Amino acid sequence: MQQRITPLMPERAEELQHIALEVIQRSATIAGRQHDITIESLKIFLRIINSYYSNLIEGHNIHPYDIVRAMQEEYDSEPAKRDLQMESVAHVLVQDCMETRLRESPELNITGSEFLCFLHREFYRQLPEGFRIVKDEKTGRESQVIPGMLRNEPVIVGRHRPPDHDSVQILLDRFSDAYAPGIHHGALKLVAAAAAHHRLMWIHPFLDGNGRVARLFTEAYLHQIPVKGFGLWSVSRGLARRSTDYKSRLAGADVARKNDLDGRGNLSNDGLMVFCRFFLEVCLDQAEYMAGLLQLDELVERVRKYIEFRDAGLIPNPIGKYALRLEAAPMIQEVLMKGEIPRGLAITASGLKERTGRNLLGQLIDEGLLVADSPKGNVRMGFPVHAAGWFFPDLYPATRI
Image (cartoon, rainbow, N blue to C red; front, side, top):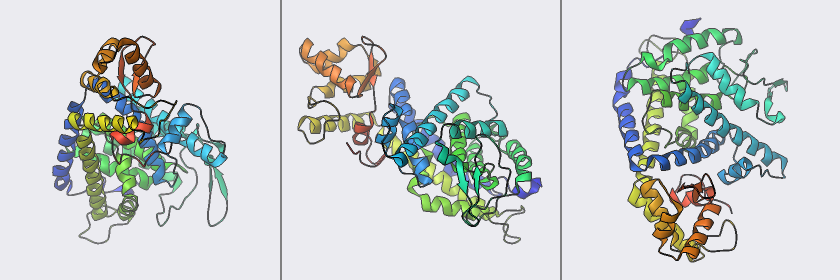
């Protein structure tokens, strides 16, 4: 039974090392382009982006602006939209919980079934009741998805017939042994992450939610390897932007071995090779995209341009009735340069008189452009969804205000 999942790694995996190494090197350059405090603020914001794109792959489209509203407990009156908001918030919270576990337990067995069930359980227990029901399109039979429970019935996913439910645990045990990050070395760890992503989808261990669990698992894998700078770019964004190719490459790696030239396992080696190459190309594309956006001088310029447009009334004011003064630009630039600064220094950077500068600082905090932990505490960079689209062009669709 265990042989049904072979090959576990592409038989010419060394041919993929060069692109895997490019991903690792490019990602490592990102973290050095901003202050560590700013980096942490950006990672929090990017969880929302991950949620948006991961659910978009499943055909569930809810704008990041509406996700933020839901995180502030502002749910839409329309039931369908409210359900999508709840689903998206669940994804954000699970990713946060997952990353906390990884920080607290660096040696956590992320390839084991316990961790995979944890991801599924934490996600599904927060979903609306209607999202826990799956329906067989042919028979009309409905089944209840139990959070964290491995599937106990056969399923068909498009043209893919996942292995029988009786073999799921056996295959997951094999999966855990084969993909534990510690048994792979160097850039091959990233190739293993790509292969593991497909093989987890192929096993289809849960009745529903396998795509989301696989993408969350992949996030955990890249954190644990670790890929320095990961968390500042999103695999899900890249996969969603090439969703048709993503699903096609997954299907291509699902097929049985074609002939004697197609590896020595039960499944197609060529199919797995193509998927892994595609996955690594997506990672490289996203790492390069964020590396470009996070160059400090260019980010400062985009922030300045955003404030100019706000001052001229060319961008709608997200809250309140006041435009944003041009003097906000040097305040934010000072924060970007130093990560976190006292309020007095921010006011000084504006060049305004004390009272006027304090009012402008208050506006920046009210709008979320700057963040503070207390009424008199230091301020650091914020990335509110109404402005982040201007700071990071094409990160997500234009905001609806």
